[in-house]
Length: 387
Image 1: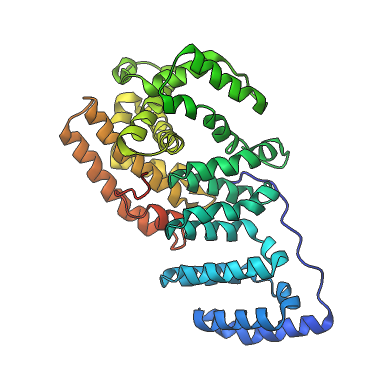
Image 2 (image 1 turned 135 degrees about the vertical axis):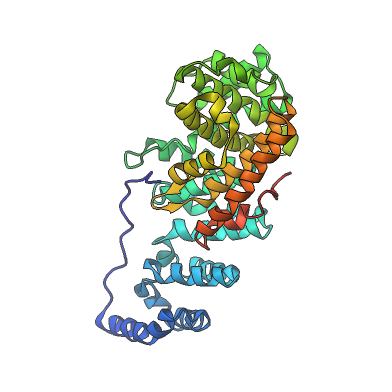
């Protein structure tokens, strides 16, 4: 993702000679269990040191590798909750040590809360992201995606209202509009809820946007287009079959808007999450259309999906499960959308769905066991997050 150029948090002050000896002795005794991934003994020894030597705990520097490896081992055993329990205790009792990798740890906690049906507790763990919004920008961006993928609009807007400005304005952040985009979209939601596209509704959206001081030009025409195409009739997808790149872009925008409305109404997903899934679809179709035109893009073949996921659903060098599985979920719904509107028949829909199911299996195998996408979207094609 590489959204941030931030400097890593500085570590603790150097330990005293006595503390250094204590830490060294602990690590020498801990290493055999670490090498064999004996999670029971690893947990026992960490908890004992936390209890008996709280002042020296930060000098263990478990945040550098050990806790991540422990979390992965527990996840493979189906015991992720035990890892989160440890993180929660460190968060409470060792805030300075926790802050060294806060973004990663809070993401683990929030994913666990969502996966176990404790959504109401999620905003409790936004506090450090809100206080230090640019310290772990990549993880903050991942959190925004998770909230969107799990149909959590209230939590999303609670977070983005606070972090969007500092992240966008920071000179140390690249592509810092990922939160601001959703603050802007939030201002459309009342009109979408009322299904209103009148001049009055458009002006109300404009009035809601103006105090935000967004760094781009606002105009009523673009607002009206968004509302009308989201709430209006099925776009003429065949009208740009033989046209060029500019027409393809406009065609994808129309589909983005109208598919948002379909997902909201037919699937029962919030406006924000509907737009999120529609954005994945629009990006995929635009990229695929560049290779072979709109007609080629709309055939939606397993091979083109596979290539797109490999190229565009990644975090650094690893596959991004939330992005990849969100795309597959969106394509599954898109096949029904196109059939519903008579663009293709039931046979074509069944073929696309079968392609998605076949591709899901290697995608699932390729994901790291701790990937949040597996835990939150791994029931594909079932989507567990409808209202």
